[in-house]
Length: 277
Image (cartoon, rainbow, N blue to C red; front, top):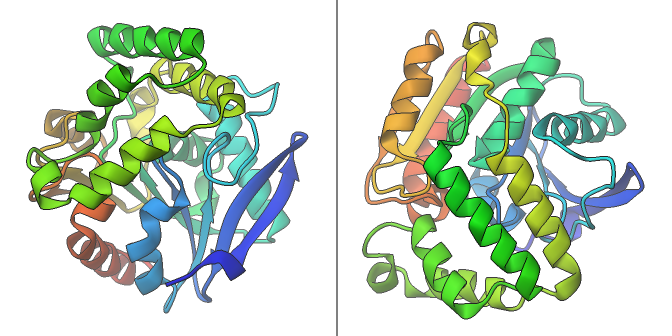
C-alpha cells in the first residue's frame, strides 16, 4: 500500500516534522524506533486505518522529517512536539502505540497529558534508565559516528544484529539488507541529528519511577529474541504498571512490527477493540 499521498508536514520549533495522516475513527499516534522511520509501521497502518485514524510521524532526523530542533534536549521535549502535532490536527484524545524510543517519548507524553491518552501500547522498549553497560557502549558508538560523519561499515555490522531475530539474515534477508543499506547511505547532514537523538535516548531519565501514574489500559509486547531491549525489561515494566498486559512475540527481535507483522497487528486490533469500546 502506497501511503505517499497521505504524507504531510508541519513546522514545529522551526523544523519540519513529516507525518502520515490516514484513516478515520478513533485516533492512534504511532512512534517508531531509532534508526527507522514511519514505514516500520506499514503493515499495521494498512490494517488499522480501516477502523482508526492513524497519525504516524517520522522522528526528527529520520524519514522525511528535518533536523532535531536546536532547543530539543530530552524525550520530554519530543513528547511536547508530538502533542503540538496533535493540537494542530485538533485531536484531543488518542491512543499511543510506540516501539522502542516511540514508547519512551510516549511515556513522557502520558505523564505530561494523561487525560488525552486513552490507551498505551509499548513494544520492544524500556522506559527505565538505560543500564550503565549498554549506555556506555552506545555512547561509544555515537562518538564513532560523530567522528566519522557517517555510520562506518564495521559499526553497521555491530548495529544491525541488535534489531533482528537470530536467523533474520536467512529468514528475512531483504529486511536486513534494506536496513543496512539505509544506514550506509545516511546523508552527512543527518548525522548530527542521529547522534543528538541517540544521546537523548540512551541518556533518558527513568519514567518507570512514575509507574503509578500509568493508569490507562496498557499493552506491553516484546520479541522473545530482542537483543536491544530484553524480555526481562518488559517484565519489569509489566510488574510496575498495574493492570498491564504482557505479550511475547515469537521469532521476533527488536523490529517486531515487521518481523512478525501479522501477529503484532492482530494483538493490536484485539487490544484496541477491547479498550476503546
